[in-house]
Length: 293
Image 1 (tube, rainbow, N blue to C red):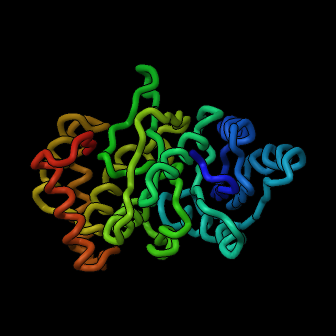
Image 2: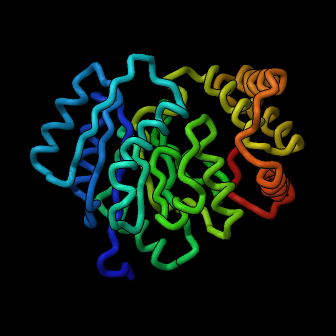
């Protein structure tokens, strides 16, 4: 049972989402339990996104808009988190129980957030939760496999106490892995729920391309301290089943080795890297199911 007075706040970085944002707006305003506030950070949109948001803001006083200027092309990771952080700064000192990082290219059911709140009410140690992605690559809406502890970066529902303890999101590619490592190391549970569906209207990789996305995954893997044994299996998996076929695995390896040669500093401490390596290796041994490589 959801505790009376429980409230959550949405923070949405957005840039040039005129094709999809109406679906997200409708999904939110029709929720059975609505957010107390929704901060939409317009990160320099050049299409009709601002006009669409404004039409909803006029109808729903709990929708707020923060406009920023960014002339560079959209990139994953750092710019998105920077935009989120600017929105979070507006609400960090207010009273709320949960904060949600919500992208504006999603569609979900009217009871999506109510059901997530129920899961958090049942498990006081649940720190980060989400539903699952469904994407359509021409074969209908199919779920994107994720390890059981992983939560969807496009819609992360986070207990405020957990968010505070992990120090928020880091402004770098890999932020949505580091948050889970840090949360679990502090005793929090992180989990997705397979019966809660989000329709991801803009498939992963469509923004920067699938080849670059695979290279980015290799880069992130090194920066978050994953185990070498699991990484080789990951490359093999992408070679066999990746998008694009064969090249996907090669680009994951390229992104990893490039980052090694650049001697870039990892995003995690040695202790966090060891924790993450053990977590990944436990998946190989079959201790954690629902694996997505």
